[in-house]
Amino acid sequence: MSETEEYLSKEKFEELNKELDYLKTKRRKEIAESLEYARSLGDMKENAEYQEAREMQAATEERIQKLESILKSAKIVSHKKSDAVSLGSSVTIQKDGEKEKHEYTIVGSEEADMHKRKISHQSPLGEAMMGKKKGETFSFETPSGKMNYKVLSVE
Image (cartoon, rainbow, N blue to C red; front, side, top):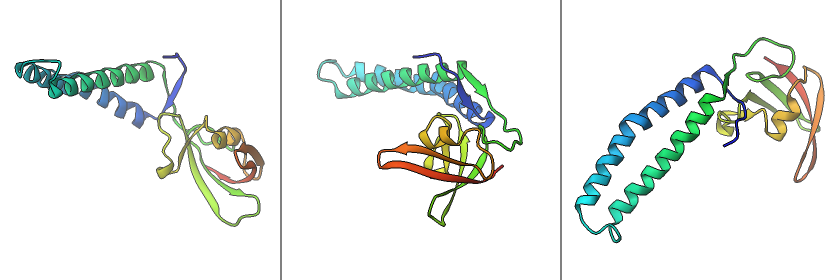
């Protein structure tokens, strides 16, 4: 896995640490018990419980590695009041020719969640907004063509 910096809020950093702790302690123990039980059933080649437990073990170990990598390279971001869009900013934008306004919070890629209106600073829209100030316009390319927006507010 590449050693790129991962930007996280303090809350997300703590959430990922809790998940890692759970996986390393409780989840590993649960899987070990499942493997032990499945082994007791006999023939491993045709033992669905054993195969499932091995797959759960592999997925858990992969997630542990990913979390360790993220947390090792994490930079904790605390939003500082600024006129320009940066990580942690809440931004209200409006597409050219539309009345509807859209509000987003700019976050690191691990926290991005469109349902919560949190977009990554690395997404095309997030990247195009970075550094912009209230009143400025920006554009970016999408599969359906160039989109033009105006920044209405930055908090």
